[in-house]
Image 1 (tube, one colour):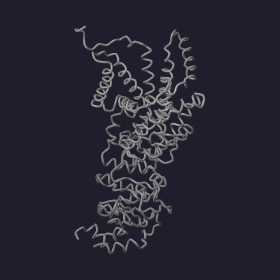
Image 2: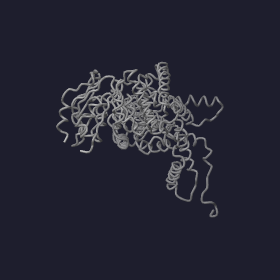
Image 3: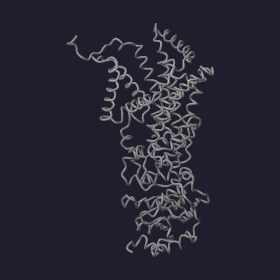
Length: 324
Length: 273
């Protein structure tokens, strides 16, 4: 034992399809979540740090509509997206007039206010116990997809594999739509606002309106991410929506590269694979320390990335350097 | 030293060289704390004129620009553009009315290609509204190709054709100045306000820019108001000169009259009192 290397890698779970399916679902959820950040930060230049709050509103609204109001899951989702967008409008109207740093602070505060409300408004949100029982409609869809997988020859499909498929179909579809929208006159105005708001206004563009649109759409994306988070866990609790979620989204954003929607999926995948893959590194220290160490290693990797490739994997260097 | 003549010219109605006024400002005031940066500025700009706005540093020229283009909220006074009251309107609304400005420090949209800078400024692009992207794809694509053509024509005039696909941030200072003017022209202005258009560009480019101003005025009837420090440019290329000092308009008239005005000489031109 003593002469064995202190670092060892166990491959027991490494090849487990169940494990990687879960990792894939989380990465897909983060992709949708971070597409909103890309729209705000990468293409509009507004620093939205409240994305986890929008995700919470989306997930909670959906769950409340289904379990309390008895609405169909399929009606509850679009309604929840509208509710989330309405919140974004209310948050954006005063805060988008602020300078970038104050906007960041006020959106973080908003996000925490949402989480703390979810924790304390027990009648509505179930408090720390959260909400269960909104997944019935999804289960039947999941069964159908499982049936297809069986008919394709996979005798015993992974239970979460249907969710994995759907989350990535949605994520890639949204990525496609957003990158198309970016190449339109609308996207051009957004970029102009990012570059110089006053110049955009002097050329007849209502910069404020575009910032609002950007935030509202990002909030809608946050809500969709919230649905997948809720389906993956099959319950929701306030702790899932801590600001850390937003920060992780920013890490993926930076990793994939600013101002490139396809980079978001790559950033989310690489980040999650490294983060979860590090679980298999066995060190002669306690599990708690290993858990913390995973983030230390990721942080180090991000610092190295910033030092050697500040534009991220797919970002355009010109857009970073010239932006200043 | 110059209080006496200052009030005399500022309060009497001023002719604008026989032209109908396209723009009028009346007693415009802007205070920053205790400082009155613009202190009751009154002036008018004749339609189709090239009017120069001169004055020593700190006279309030740029602040006045910011006021009449909606970037600052005024503390008093009125202003009209083609008979419509404009103070308090947001900048984008004024730009759409045809009152387009440039900035003293160029605002090239650095991380966007030159052609995108240009096309951005084109008016009436339905594709700038999300709904139209989905429901009127043909109309915005059509407009887009019109705008591209217009943009390329203008870039040609300013010798920027070869740079169309370069990021604006890679342009030299002088080229950025030209790009900003070309971009302002894309917005189809009736009244163009230029804040120190010649600053930092070489004489050859400056020449081109002045020629182009003259041509635009002649062919399209565009009106110009420009802030300038180069007296040679002001005296030879403008048909009216407005002089500001300490937040007020102290003189207004033909270049030759202004050159001889004692209050102007005291405040600005002569310098050595």
